[in-house]
Image (cartoon, rainbow, N blue to C red; front, side, top):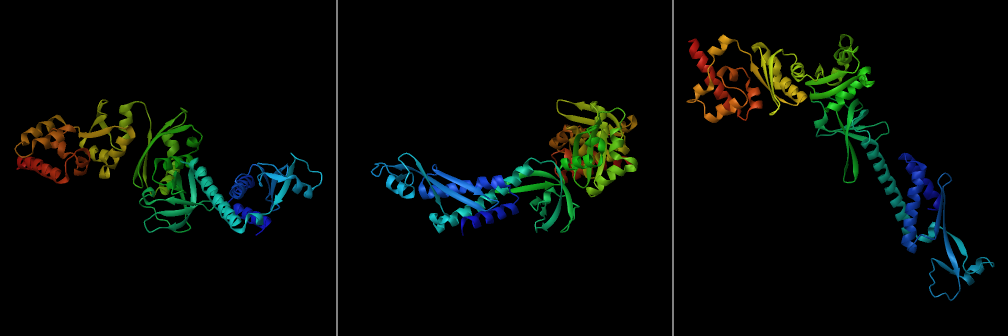
Length: 419
């Protein structure tokens, strides 16, 4: 393969990899200089001229003319005066003699090694280009086409340039179902290097994905008139979004929901019917807590800033709303305000008189269990029974079997009273 064929083939390869010509020139010169150093130790007296458009490659060696009996003669750096005069009679000692070398002068093996090195460097540059591109776009919304679905649930997608992206199983909404060729929206979650190869990981479960969807569907959010203060999610199930308006004339919740729910509905569909609560943010902590627990109506709130815990009192019929299915509502509300929320029934005075202190059950319930219940503010039988087993599991360190035993003992107390 001559120099022109080599350069043209490499330029075509680089074009396929979307590598610009100046970068290709830099890579070519770097590799050829490496080839020169392997053959001649140094490349300082060599000039490399490349014209990728024409496929031209010229390698020129410049040697200094020295006397024929020069003691430190180096064939790579010097040329004897007698040899120089054979090239041109006018050459004198101290002048430089340029000499063009052909690829064949370097030997077939060295040229083949250089070609393989060039291809590898172009591939490495392509990888670096991909990594840098997406590293700077982390958090951005992207649409990509499903290329392959792997057995472990990971989805391989391709972007507009045909580059592969990954949507791992744990970054998919549980209800997501995609087929090859489907167009998928997600956010760029992170760009990592694994064993020298870039991996671009997407996400549909992160709060940033929901935030980007609001930006795309709500012009006031995109324009900065409404700020999204915080988002918490149980992907595919429920989300709470705190919003704030910088314009008193704009209702942030109404703007995000849209006329007849048009804006929020398109987001909900994208998230596989994830239930989204849009909440008006406020610096008033108690009001913010009450809004976070929507749709439940709160009767009273006690905040302990030291322990970062909140005691919320509600009418008995509101407790289940505050907790939500599987404890989702209270869990998300706690994350939204960044404090642990404990829910209590706000009992009427006559109901409180009918209640029984947990200390009365010491013969049947061990002291450490009572202490654990009291730790989260439960000191009466009815306060324990007001919570579901799942809620008690979440808020205490008690095992499921222990909680069932305790609740059975407490229920029997009131059943006996009724008898």
